[in-house]
Length: 459
Image (cartoon, rainbow, N blue to C red; front, top):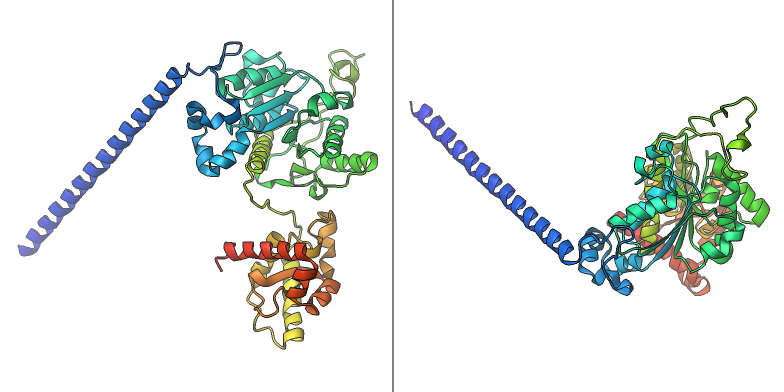
């Protein structure tokens, strides 16, 4: 009987605790909803007191101080999440920037859209083409009502409703060498190449290099389906992409440019080919359908999500660059586990040869993979600015090895550098003080990389 009474008391206690917890939960939810409603009312009043959205095309937008957009209450509220992420000063760099986007299709429209939403203060949008019904599967903002209108004008119309404080110029224009001065003048902070015609793309990239403008180029997004294979890397490192291959060849052949241009590309091989031309009459040829001479008429199948992701990646890369927010892109290093095992084995042998034992080797194969791929990007520490990357890079693993940077410390993650055999011999015969005095830039670069390893491994 006593046991039964204890059980009843326990049940009552649990029920009471549950009721109390439920009451607390309900109170928390109610408070959250109340705060949300108050916040919503605050934002609505803020917009109304500042003349509404001010975004209808052709109407007078409210006056703001363009020299300091973040001082405006509406703009600051709209960009509050970015400000929380970057900090005020870094976000200010974004709002003061000028970006040119050339090519406003599936990739370019999404890139431009997120640049706008990220607070870029001035945009020049360039495309000669019109919105088509078949492009709605991948365009960022176009609707059926926009079909037949210029892509540049379409974006400006929609963008003016999203962020009317942005200074937007739309040019219905084809980029070619004759338009270089007109389109690339004004010292843009970044140029986005979202063109899918090789001649025009090569011309634009060469012009940006010649003018010293920062440019990010989109390679082939059509006929692909795997979003996990999209990368940002130097043009010289892009593989499995026919467009990259053609652009590399033309830039080197016609302009002597072999790399130094960041690109967004996919490691995935194209899943489909250009569709055959089909005219409505027997006597018609592809040239009869060209809007501009030399531009492709045959269609490449496109899964709309992939060009959209390309554009999002481009916008993220550019915005972080403008904000001077540092991060390391994933290197394109085509080594397999056996290569890392070889490098680990060489390290053990080298330690035994130089120090008499391998007891102070504090890394395994997985950590060697991190050091080689993430820290040194598959290249000698002395070749970090070289352009022999991609396929040429992994073939040179036979002449690479890991050695201690500071010989007085163990061979750990934050004390190993990747060098060629001859460089390793020279390093072992020198001291850190000598390197610091004779090669201060190299010393600073290695120290910076190894500090990154310390931070990431919390050493």
